[in-house]
Image 1 (cartoon, rainbow, N blue to C red):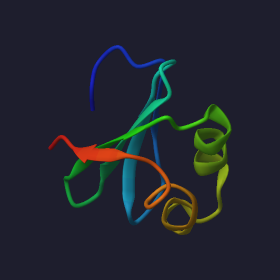
Image 2: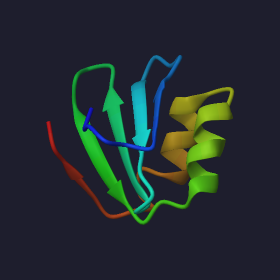
Image 3: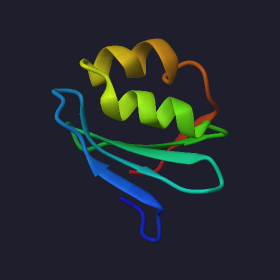
Length: 74
């Protein structure tokens, strides 16, 4: 994960390993398979809901995957 993030959280998920969020509304997600993606313009409420979701993978697929501009960084 990238350094100097405001929020870095390991995730208990079969899809997502960790999330990092910065004040510029950039969300970095590290997937269990090793890929890391950066999502732009993500409101903090979306990140909070991801972290507290019962199924983080389902929440990601419904609310993040196709909703924000993103780029693969690793």
